[in-house]
Image (cartoon, rainbow, N blue to C red; front, top):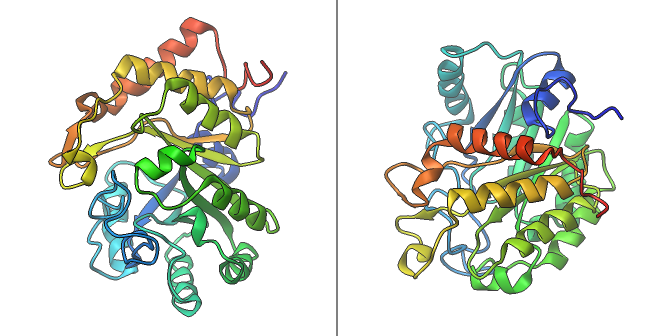
Length: 307
Protein backbone atom coordinates (compact mmCIF):
# COMPACT_ATOMS: atom_id res chain seq x y z
CA UNK A 1 0.00 0.00 0.00
CA UNK A 2 1.31 3.43 -0.95
CA UNK A 3 1.66 5.90 1.92
CA UNK A 4 1.82 9.70 1.51
CA UNK A 5 5.24 9.76 3.15
CA UNK A 6 6.83 7.13 0.94
CA UNK A 7 10.18 8.51 -0.20
CA UNK A 8 10.62 10.73 2.84
CA UNK A 9 12.90 8.25 4.66
CA UNK A 10 10.54 8.56 7.65
CA UNK A 11 8.01 6.21 9.23
CA UNK A 12 5.55 9.08 9.59
CA UNK A 13 4.29 11.95 7.39
CA UNK A 14 6.73 14.81 8.11
CA UNK A 15 5.86 18.42 7.44
CA UNK A 16 9.00 19.01 5.39
CA UNK A 17 7.93 16.24 2.99
CA UNK A 18 4.40 17.60 2.71
CA UNK A 19 5.77 21.06 1.81
CA UNK A 20 8.39 19.70 -0.58
CA UNK A 21 5.87 17.65 -2.55
CA UNK A 22 3.24 20.40 -2.54
CA UNK A 23 5.49 23.31 -3.53
CA UNK A 24 8.23 21.41 -5.35
CA UNK A 25 10.92 22.64 -2.98
CA UNK A 26 11.69 23.64 0.59
CA UNK A 27 9.36 26.20 2.14
CA UNK A 28 10.07 28.19 5.31
CA UNK A 29 7.39 28.94 7.87
CA UNK A 30 7.99 32.44 9.25
CA UNK A 31 6.72 33.09 12.82
CA UNK A 32 5.19 36.56 13.24
CA UNK A 33 3.79 38.59 16.11
CA UNK A 34 0.61 40.43 15.14
CA UNK A 35 0.26 42.22 18.48
CA UNK A 36 -2.51 39.91 19.68
CA UNK A 37 -3.53 39.07 23.22
CA UNK A 38 -5.73 36.25 24.51
CA UNK A 39 -9.18 36.03 26.12
CA UNK A 40 -7.57 33.96 28.84
CA UNK A 41 -5.32 36.89 29.74
CA UNK A 42 -7.43 40.01 29.32
CA UNK A 43 -10.22 38.90 31.65
CA UNK A 44 -12.73 37.84 28.98
CA UNK A 45 -12.21 34.18 29.91
CA UNK A 46 -9.53 34.39 32.59
CA UNK A 47 -6.47 36.16 33.92
CA UNK A 48 -2.86 35.03 33.66
CA UNK A 49 -3.28 32.61 30.77
CA UNK A 50 -2.82 28.86 30.70
CA UNK A 51 -0.59 27.64 33.52
CA UNK A 52 2.24 26.69 31.14
CA UNK A 53 2.08 29.64 28.72
CA UNK A 54 5.08 31.96 28.48
CA UNK A 55 4.90 35.73 28.73
CA UNK A 56 5.31 35.88 24.94
CA UNK A 57 2.31 33.63 24.34
CA UNK A 58 4.40 30.93 22.63
CA UNK A 59 6.12 33.49 20.43
CA UNK A 60 9.44 33.42 22.30
CA UNK A 61 11.57 33.02 19.18
CA UNK A 62 9.94 35.64 16.97
CA UNK A 63 12.45 38.10 15.54
CA UNK A 64 11.82 41.70 16.70
CA UNK A 65 8.17 41.19 17.73
CA UNK A 66 7.73 44.90 18.46
CA UNK A 67 8.45 45.84 14.83
CA UNK A 68 6.29 45.73 11.69
CA UNK A 69 5.40 42.45 10.03
CA UNK A 70 7.74 43.28 7.14
CA UNK A 71 10.63 44.01 9.51
CA UNK A 72 10.01 40.74 11.38
CA UNK A 73 9.88 38.87 8.08
CA UNK A 74 13.03 40.47 6.70
CA UNK A 75 15.02 39.63 9.80
CA UNK A 76 13.87 36.02 9.72
CA UNK A 77 14.53 35.72 5.99
CA UNK A 78 18.06 37.01 6.44
CA UNK A 79 18.67 34.30 9.01
CA UNK A 80 17.20 31.63 6.74
CA UNK A 81 19.18 32.61 3.67
CA UNK A 82 22.37 31.98 5.61
CA UNK A 83 21.33 28.31 5.91
CA UNK A 84 19.30 27.43 2.81
CA UNK A 85 17.28 28.97 -0.02
CA UNK A 86 13.52 28.44 0.34
CA UNK A 87 11.28 28.45 -2.73
CA UNK A 88 8.63 30.28 -0.70
CA UNK A 89 7.49 31.36 2.75
CA UNK A 90 4.42 30.77 4.91
CA UNK A 91 3.74 33.74 7.23
CA UNK A 92 2.67 32.28 10.58
CA UNK A 93 0.83 34.27 13.27
CA UNK A 94 2.19 32.26 16.18
CA UNK A 95 2.00 34.28 19.37
CA UNK A 96 -1.12 34.46 21.54
CA UNK A 97 -4.48 34.12 19.73
CA UNK A 98 -4.31 34.99 16.03
CA UNK A 99 -8.05 35.43 15.51
CA UNK A 100 -8.67 37.49 18.64
CA UNK A 101 -9.13 41.04 17.36
CA UNK A 102 -11.76 43.07 15.47
CA UNK A 103 -12.40 41.69 11.99
CA UNK A 104 -11.15 44.91 10.40
CA UNK A 105 -7.81 44.59 12.20
CA UNK A 106 -7.50 40.92 11.31
CA UNK A 107 -8.16 41.64 7.62
CA UNK A 108 -5.44 44.29 7.68
CA UNK A 109 -2.89 41.97 9.30
CA UNK A 110 -3.65 38.96 7.11
CA UNK A 111 -3.48 41.12 3.98
CA UNK A 112 -0.10 42.49 5.04
CA UNK A 113 1.17 38.96 5.66
CA UNK A 114 0.10 37.71 2.24
CA UNK A 115 1.85 40.69 0.62
CA UNK A 116 5.21 39.59 2.04
CA UNK A 117 7.74 38.47 -0.61
CA UNK A 118 7.22 34.92 -1.94
CA UNK A 119 4.35 34.15 0.44
CA UNK A 120 2.77 30.85 -0.67
CA UNK A 121 0.30 30.47 2.18
CA UNK A 122 -0.84 31.74 5.55
CA UNK A 123 -0.93 29.98 8.93
CA UNK A 124 -2.81 31.29 11.97
CA UNK A 125 -2.60 29.89 15.52
CA UNK A 126 -5.64 30.38 17.71
CA UNK A 127 -7.81 28.96 20.47
CA UNK A 128 -10.79 26.70 19.72
CA UNK A 129 -13.12 29.21 21.39
CA UNK A 130 -11.99 32.09 19.14
CA UNK A 131 -13.34 30.84 15.82
CA UNK A 132 -16.79 32.44 15.78
CA UNK A 133 -19.03 32.82 12.75
CA UNK A 134 -17.81 36.35 11.99
CA UNK A 135 -14.20 35.15 12.07
CA UNK A 136 -15.07 32.25 9.77
CA UNK A 137 -16.57 34.61 7.20
CA UNK A 138 -13.24 36.44 7.13
CA UNK A 139 -11.22 33.22 7.00
CA UNK A 140 -13.33 32.02 4.09
CA UNK A 141 -12.30 35.13 2.15
CA UNK A 142 -8.61 34.38 2.66
CA UNK A 143 -9.07 30.67 1.97
CA UNK A 144 -10.06 31.70 -1.57
CA UNK A 145 -6.81 33.66 -1.95
CA UNK A 146 -4.15 31.33 -0.53
CA UNK A 147 -3.38 28.02 1.17
CA UNK A 148 -4.77 28.79 4.62
CA UNK A 149 -3.99 26.74 7.73
CA UNK A 150 -5.68 27.27 11.08
CA UNK A 151 -3.78 25.85 14.03
CA UNK A 152 -6.05 25.07 16.97
CA UNK A 153 -4.42 24.87 20.40
CA UNK A 154 -6.51 22.02 21.77
CA UNK A 155 -3.69 20.54 23.94
CA UNK A 156 -5.93 17.76 25.36
CA UNK A 157 -9.39 16.28 24.76
CA UNK A 158 -9.96 15.97 28.51
CA UNK A 159 -11.81 18.89 30.07
CA UNK A 160 -10.63 18.11 33.59
CA UNK A 161 -7.03 18.46 32.41
CA UNK A 162 -7.86 21.74 30.69
CA UNK A 163 -9.42 23.01 33.91
CA UNK A 164 -6.32 22.06 35.94
CA UNK A 165 -4.22 24.07 33.49
CA UNK A 166 -6.49 27.13 33.57
CA UNK A 167 -7.18 26.86 29.83
CA UNK A 168 -10.81 28.06 29.95
CA UNK A 169 -11.81 26.23 26.80
CA UNK A 170 -13.38 22.80 26.34
CA UNK A 171 -13.38 19.92 23.90
CA UNK A 172 -16.87 21.02 22.86
CA UNK A 173 -15.33 24.35 21.80
CA UNK A 174 -12.95 22.42 19.56
CA UNK A 175 -15.77 20.38 18.04
CA UNK A 176 -17.68 23.57 17.25
CA UNK A 177 -14.62 25.28 15.75
CA UNK A 178 -13.79 22.25 13.62
CA UNK A 179 -17.34 22.04 12.31
CA UNK A 180 -17.21 25.69 11.24
CA UNK A 181 -13.79 25.40 9.63
CA UNK A 182 -14.83 22.32 7.69
CA UNK A 183 -17.28 24.48 5.71
CA UNK A 184 -14.38 26.13 3.89
CA UNK A 185 -11.20 24.99 2.11
CA UNK A 186 -8.77 25.40 4.98
CA UNK A 187 -6.28 23.00 6.52
CA UNK A 188 -6.72 22.36 10.24
CA UNK A 189 -3.67 21.61 12.39
CA UNK A 190 -4.27 20.51 15.99
CA UNK A 191 -1.74 21.21 18.73
CA UNK A 192 -1.44 18.64 21.54
CA UNK A 193 0.82 18.75 24.60
CA UNK A 194 2.11 15.56 26.21
CA UNK A 195 2.73 15.46 29.94
CA UNK A 196 0.04 17.86 31.15
CA UNK A 197 -0.48 17.60 34.94
CA UNK A 198 -2.56 14.61 35.97
CA UNK A 199 -2.67 12.93 32.57
CA UNK A 200 -1.61 9.35 31.96
CA UNK A 201 0.20 8.15 28.82
CA UNK A 202 -3.01 6.35 27.88
CA UNK A 203 -4.92 9.63 27.94
CA UNK A 204 -2.28 11.31 25.77
CA UNK A 205 -2.70 8.56 23.19
CA UNK A 206 -6.50 8.88 23.46
CA UNK A 207 -6.22 12.58 22.64
CA UNK A 208 -4.24 11.81 19.49
CA UNK A 209 -6.56 8.99 18.44
CA UNK A 210 -9.70 11.07 18.91
CA UNK A 211 -8.56 14.24 17.12
CA UNK A 212 -7.05 12.10 14.37
CA UNK A 213 -10.44 10.49 13.79
CA UNK A 214 -12.13 13.87 13.25
CA UNK A 215 -10.83 14.67 9.78
CA UNK A 216 -7.99 17.01 10.74
CA UNK A 217 -5.11 17.66 8.33
CA UNK A 218 -2.09 17.98 10.62
CA UNK A 219 -0.90 17.79 14.22
CA UNK A 220 1.82 19.33 16.35
CA UNK A 221 3.01 17.28 19.31
CA UNK A 222 5.46 18.29 22.02
CA UNK A 223 6.25 17.85 25.68
CA UNK A 224 5.03 20.22 28.35
CA UNK A 225 7.73 22.76 29.13
CA UNK A 226 8.08 24.24 32.59
CA UNK A 227 9.08 27.86 31.96
CA UNK A 228 10.32 30.43 34.42
CA UNK A 229 7.65 32.95 35.39
CA UNK A 230 4.66 30.73 34.61
CA UNK A 231 2.15 29.49 37.21
CA UNK A 232 3.27 25.93 36.42
CA UNK A 233 6.77 26.77 37.60
CA UNK A 234 5.39 27.55 41.06
CA UNK A 235 3.72 24.14 41.54
CA UNK A 236 5.17 20.68 42.19
CA UNK A 237 5.38 18.86 38.88
CA UNK A 238 7.29 15.88 37.52
CA UNK A 239 8.04 15.95 33.79
CA UNK A 240 8.01 12.97 31.49
CA UNK A 241 11.40 11.39 31.04
CA UNK A 242 12.77 11.34 27.51
CA UNK A 243 12.13 7.60 27.34
CA UNK A 244 8.51 8.06 28.42
CA UNK A 245 8.02 10.87 25.93
CA UNK A 246 9.45 8.89 23.02
CA UNK A 247 7.20 5.95 23.91
CA UNK A 248 4.09 8.16 24.00
CA UNK A 249 4.96 9.84 20.70
CA UNK A 250 5.40 6.49 18.97
CA UNK A 251 2.09 5.26 20.43
CA UNK A 252 0.40 8.41 19.13
CA UNK A 253 1.89 8.08 15.66
CA UNK A 254 0.65 4.50 15.47
CA UNK A 255 -2.97 5.61 16.01
CA UNK A 256 -2.93 8.71 13.78
CA UNK A 257 -4.19 8.29 10.19
CA UNK A 258 -1.26 8.14 7.74
CA UNK A 259 -2.58 11.13 5.78
CA UNK A 260 -2.32 13.45 8.83
CA UNK A 261 0.79 15.62 8.44
CA UNK A 262 3.10 15.67 11.47
CA UNK A 263 4.18 19.30 11.75
CA UNK A 264 6.10 18.80 14.99
CA UNK A 265 7.27 15.96 17.25
CA UNK A 266 9.15 18.01 19.81
CA UNK A 267 9.31 21.68 20.73
CA UNK A 268 11.55 24.45 21.99
CA UNK A 269 11.52 26.23 25.31
CA UNK A 270 13.44 29.49 25.48
CA UNK A 271 16.84 28.48 26.82
CA UNK A 272 17.17 30.87 29.73
CA UNK A 273 13.56 30.29 30.81
CA UNK A 274 13.34 26.50 30.42
CA UNK A 275 13.35 24.84 33.83
CA UNK A 276 12.37 21.36 32.65
CA UNK A 277 12.58 18.92 30.97
CA UNK A 278 16.25 19.46 30.32
CA UNK A 279 16.37 16.71 27.67
CA UNK A 280 14.05 18.77 25.43
CA UNK A 281 16.95 21.15 24.71
CA UNK A 282 18.46 18.55 22.35
CA UNK A 283 15.84 18.26 19.63
CA UNK A 284 18.04 16.19 17.35
CA UNK A 285 18.53 13.58 20.03
CA UNK A 286 14.79 13.39 20.72
CA UNK A 287 13.91 13.06 17.04
CA UNK A 288 16.60 10.43 16.52
CA UNK A 289 15.26 8.46 19.49
CA UNK A 290 11.75 8.55 18.00
CA UNK A 291 13.08 7.27 14.67
CA UNK A 292 14.96 4.47 16.41
CA UNK A 293 11.96 3.40 18.47
CA UNK A 294 9.64 3.30 15.45
CA UNK A 295 12.21 1.17 13.63
CA UNK A 296 12.65 -1.11 16.65
CA UNK A 297 8.89 -1.65 16.81
CA UNK A 298 8.58 -2.09 13.07
CA UNK A 299 5.90 0.62 13.21
CA UNK A 300 4.70 3.28 10.79
CA UNK A 301 2.13 6.03 11.26
CA UNK A 302 -1.36 4.58 11.37
CA UNK A 303 -0.36 0.95 11.86
CA UNK A 304 -2.63 0.61 14.95
CA UNK A 305 -5.34 2.92 13.66
CA UNK A 306 -8.01 0.24 13.83
CA UNK A 307 -6.72 -1.80 16.76
